Image (cartoon, rainbow, N blue to C red):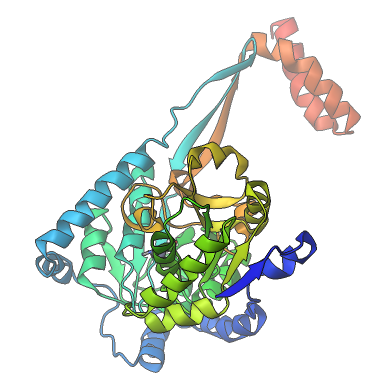
Length: 425
Ligand code: HSO
Ligand code: ZN
C-alpha cells in the first residue's frame, strides 16, 4: 500500500481514480460470441464449453438428482450458517415491500402504484476460485420475495453450496454454463435456456462486457460492474488489526480489488499498514491480496471533515467507519454503496449474513446508483382512475396544457367527455 500524507484537494481525482478498464477491446471479442449463441443456441453453448472450459456437456441443465444430492454433501454447520443467513436476508428484504397507497390528488382523481415482480430473471454466478453461493442468496431471495415467476441460474460451477442455496431460494432451473455465452443464452434464449428480461450477478470482464452489450439491446441488467472495493475510515480509536483484516477481506477477492484507508491518525495508519503486511501472509489467497494491495492507498488527512469529503468523492462500494460515535457520521455520507458502523461491524457481515445485500455499485457508481434490493426485481406500474366529477375538476387543466403544446387530440379527449357529461348523451 502506498502511504500518502495530507494530499491537496486538487490531487484527489488522480489519487482516487480507479484503474481504467479497456472495455472496448473486450466488447469486440465478446460480440461474436453473443451472435453465435443467438444463431446457434445450445450447440454454440456446448461448443464454447469445450473450447473455453474444456468440458463436454451432454446437457446444459443440472438434473434434479444432482440438486438433491448437493444438500447431503454439505456439513450440518455450513447448512445451518446458510439457513441463518437466508433468514436474516429474507427479514431485511421482506421489510422493503411497500403496500400500494391510493392518493386522491384532486377530488375524484385517484392515482396509485402497484409492484409486479419481473416475470423472468436470470442470475449469473461465476466459477473460478471462490464459489460465491452467498451471491445466490443475495439475488435469489429478493427474486423470490418479488414473486418473479421464472428465475434461471447459470454458473459454470456446480459447487454443492451453490446448488443448495439455489434450492433454498426456490430456483429450479440451473444451467452449467459460464462466461459471456451464458449471458447471451439468458438474453436471447436457446432450446434449453429460457430468455429472461433482466440479468443479475457478478463476473469477469467478459461477463461484464456481455451484460453491457445485451443491455444496449434492451435486456435490463442489475448495474454496471467493476472490481470490488472497500474504503475504511479509521480514527485514533480504531484497532489497527481489525482495520487490516477489513482491508484484506476486500483485497482477497481479486487482483483488481481496490482498498482505501483514510485516517486522521498517523500512528493508526502505519500500524494498520504493518498489520496488513503481517496478516496477508496468512491468507490462502495471499497472491490476489498482494496484487490488489499494490495499487491500494493509505491516506493521512487533517481532520474528520476532510476525511468525509475525500470519502464522498471516492464513493466506495463499501465504506467502513471505524471511528468513535460512527452513527453520528452517517448523515454526512452522501456517496457509498453500503456503510458499516463502528469497530465491530466488519464488511464480511454484510457480504454474508447480516441481512443487507452485497450486490453494490462499484467504480464510483455509488454517486448515482443503489445496490440491489427488492426494488431491483420489481416494476412499479402506475394506475389511475378518474370519476365523472374528477374529470370535471381536472379537465380544464389538461385542456389548457394540451392546447399550449398544440396537441389537439389530447385536448379533445377531455373535451369530448365533458360535452357528453353536460348534455347527458
Ligand atoms: N464483497 C463482495 C461480495 C462477497 N464477499 C461474496 C464474499 N462473498 C462484493 O460485494
Ligand atoms: Zn467480499
